[in-house]
Image (tube, rainbow, N blue to C red; front, top):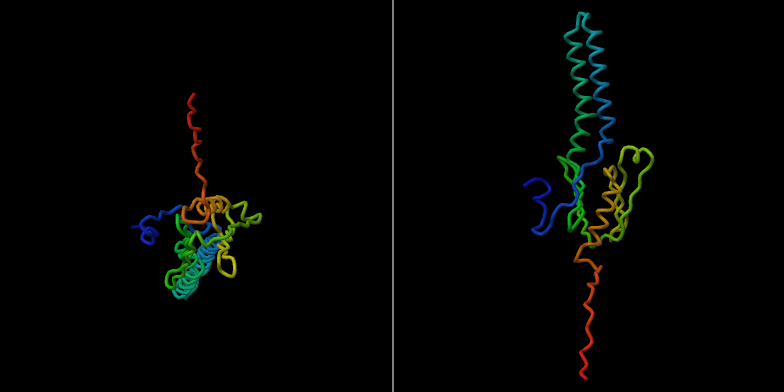
Length: 181
């Protein structure tokens, strides 16, 4: 079973499964390109030095540390962060070594709203805010297509047959009894 299918109950199915928006990787990718560029530039400058081997090792070590710390760690953090809406609940999971997660039953959600500023609207993401029985609303940042997720989540909440919203079935009109002459 693929993640998050192994977390689901028998009748539960995934409606939405998203990672945070790619905009959170923009700075790490810039750091990667700049680190490689500066590393190559420093290696070219150091090639004529008498201690060039030591300089290459130092440049490589510092470059590797910067790439692991400022690119690889944020990339792994992005890849292991999941926002999932199922037919029964909203799940959020993040982390590799220290895993954290939250599950919110759809029946406990009282309102759902979203916010996105100009940059978020340009790149197509936003913050989803879910109010439930907890003291504070829960905010999920950098949700891709936040308006679509908001609509789907609202639809799931109101289409849930176990919540307190009862849809009235149209009743058949009763025919008056036939009267004899």
